[in-house]
Each structure stands twice: as structure tokens, then as C-alpha cells.
Image (cartoon, rainbow, N blue to C red):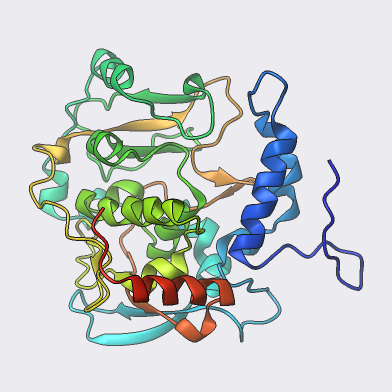
Length: 333
């Protein structure tokens, strides 16, 4: 495969900053990695796509570089109290470079979280129940089903518990979210970006809020647009974050794309978490891209309350998507 790429004066490849250009490169690399039998060789894909990127490349939707913070997207986020009285400007690139891989590996004592979070143990306490779940639906997004292992939670384990010692990549996921919204493992780059920018584990986002994340992805796919965290947080935010509990995502006033998801969700969803990790002999990662952990694997004590995304710092592509969706108005999907 021959891919013509732009280079700087030193001959180093310049990775495309526009999401649409990145999507085109993804498709080229997917075509190159597709074998004659129709299966995708993901090692070939990784070597032709992810090897071109640094961690800041794949973590910023506006092409921020380490040498220049002036063009970085600004998240207008609340901090200090759960009521969000104090407003600070936070550069998403600073979050990525200074906190990204470190926060994703941070561990917090269970005492940091509310009694409601600590109250529940998983109903997936034996492998037979997990196997029955897998028999009902497809879990994997890009790989073979056997590349990712779902495992039961031992008695007494809470959703906010620390990772087991000696396990590099393991996370909890609510089976209710997998079933209801079609979330797959590994997560999409967009889903990883949302988790990283909010500094939360997958189960730390309230299941109702996963409806907005997936709905936005489905909408973008239907309209042949690339979903980005910048556009998503133009319409949605995390006001009123209780740092010891589940993080809710809601639409900004006047910017609601979808009707709210039913508040009753699935009965006993708080007990539906199970363990997710790569299979023993698999080279697949459930949380990393190019060797970098993309989001927190366990619950964090300091989720970010985001109340907006700086429009002027978006790429032209993102601004175009925002303008189109603003004109489109309320969408019922």
C-alpha cells in the first residue's frame, strides 16, 4: 500500500489534524490490513496507522502539539464543588499530556466513593452467567470474540474496587449498557476520548448517559460524519457532578439533540457489572492504543465537570458539523 503523507522540513511525517482526514487514513489502513479471506490483520493495521501517531495526536481533536498550546481546544469546566460554582478554563491537550496516561493508571481507595456505589455486588458471580450473556449478544467491536475475556466478579467485589494486582489492563463494564446500547469492546476512539476528557472509568458514567454517547455516534454514522469529543461537548456536558457517585451527562440548554432516555433504564443495572480484559493469549488491548492507556481503568476520585467546548478552537470540520447539527435541531432517533 502506498499512502502519500505530508512531512515537515525535517522529513518527519505530519499526522492529519482534521478528523475527516484521519478517518480517510483509517479506511486506507483497514483496506491494506484486510486479508483475502476477509479478516483484518490488526497487527498490520496498528503498524500502518497507530505507529504514525504520538499520544497527543490521537488524544486531541484539534491537532495540538507539545510545543504550542495556543491553538488547543479549551474545555470550560467546573471544579471545586459538585455545584460547579467555580469555572476554570482547561486545555484538553494539557489534560492529555500531563494526566492522560497517569490518571488512567491511578488507583483510589473505595472509601472515596458514596455508600450507594459501594452497596452493590455483581450478579455476575460465576462464569455460567457470563457465558449466557455472551451467547445472547456480540461483545467485540473489531476483533474476534475470543480475543477479549469477560469474567465474573468474586464475592465482595465492588464496581469501584481497585484492580487485581499483577493485571495490567482490566476494567468493569455494565452488562446492561452492553445489551441496551450496543456498546462494544474495545471502545471506539470517540468513546475513549469522552472517558479520558471526563477522567472517568466506563462504569463511572451513568448508564442513562451512555445513551447520549451512543446516540451521538449513531447520528454521526447515519450522516456520514466523524464523531469527535469537541462536537459532542458542544451539545452535552456534566453539570452537577458528585465526585463520589456516577457521572451524569445532560444536554446544554437549547442544544438537546435527542429526547432524554427513560430514567428507569434496566432494573438492577447497578448489579450488572463484570470484568473485561484481553484473553490470555491475545495481543488485543481493551484500553490502549499504540501502547498508551487511553482512559482510566478504575474509578477516579476527581471526575471533570464539563460545561462546554470552545467553538473558536475547534477545527473547521468540527465547526461545520456543529453548524449543521445546530440547524438540524431536535432529532428523534
